[in-house]
Image (cartoon, rainbow, N blue to C red):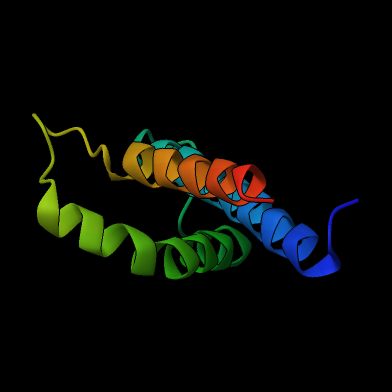
Length: 92
């Protein structure tokens, strides 16, 4: 039986993982011109995704610069989130 607080923390990690994946996909769609940033709804969704993920990704980007134009900070953040999840489950 998982304590409710641990369950909530694991759920928030899962939700943030999906938001991070959504932000990566949205950045690809914006850079390839699939999403029209003149659309108010698309602009607000992308702005929300960037606002939620940027506080986590910004410190990683300061330490690890883009490699050949490729930003690997979301990969590092996802690995860190998975490590945190396994750490919580292991010590449970």
